[in-house]
Image 1 (tube, rainbow, N blue to C red):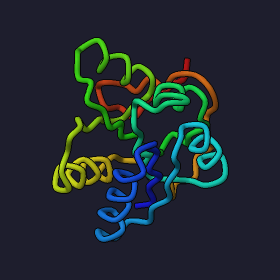
Image 2: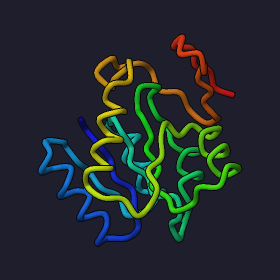
Image 3: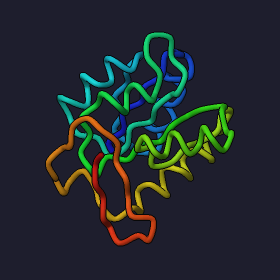
Length: 146
């Protein structure tokens, strides 16, 4: 898979890049949400691995400002796990989240799950800009933006 890692923590970002590369993934990295927005505008990714808490803008800001193809999955990394927070991130378009701290096996398990989702970047669907994505919870493949 082609993965974009967005995290302000350079040590964690480099470790994740190493893990993903070692496991056969193509990886690009961004140190902040605004640079991540620029990167997704220039290239297509299967997964954006996104930190929630960053100094300039948080992960929700990224989701509200990025133009992501419908097939691009977003895996949020966070230590927050309250019900209200989880609802908020899924309402914003997050596909999955991995609680921090996590290990290599857990990260790879989440990516394996995301790789089994029906659509992939190779389908080349037109990107949808600005707004929130809502996916049909019954799994009928219906999505719309609000």
